Image (cartoon, rainbow, N blue to C red; front, side):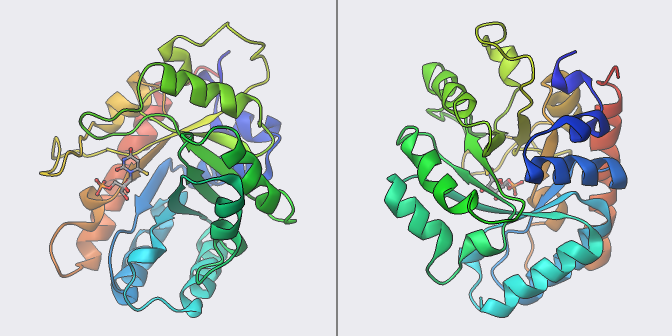
Length: 278
Ligand code: S5P
């Protein structure tokens, strides 16, 4: 059966990339396909949220460059929490430059992303060299590292459609050792690629942002769908939730955040259980 009809557990046992394996194992162990996007600007809020949601998530998604008081201790503490609470770390850096530049942005600078983020993502717009650039850093480390390509975006009017998405999938297929999947809104099979190549042992993870239970969008083009639409109907594997869980107010209410995380975890898992056949 196609990957999305199989359990996370079965897929974990077969996957060739260590980061994908670790994520799938964690999803199975915690019964969670929930990634929380911690889009806040102070390290206090950042860790208050992570500590509140940690038991309910398989993945924490960060934008470390929006933290006003970032310091190297932040990523040390984040890695510690990742081990303690069993979740992976995804820095949503959206690389988009030539191979040489993205390799430097991934390995160096203030953030040294490759030293702590299990997963990063990249826009396919520069072509395959963006993958080889990032792989020249990530694949050299003896660590669990993987890359997601942004094949589709969640925003109104996004240009990630048609042949762009098709070519993104083609690029990923050429680099299956490092590219573990896509940021997308649907499984790629559902956009007309299935059967065009030898895809027998292919298992790309689909991580879908733009998920909300109470809202259809924001004032800046974001569009939300429910976990049922995303996971059961569109075959995505991980739901990425930001403001639906962390809220939009100024003060973080850890109890509310926890309650919402639990709610999305349950919704995501039930949507997955409705989908799998093995
Ligand atoms: O197409 C996309 C890709 C990404 S990675 N649409 C998105 O919204 N994202 C990210 O997901 C975005 O950068 C943000 O961090 C998160 C969605 O946040 P929310 O508050 O709208 O749930």
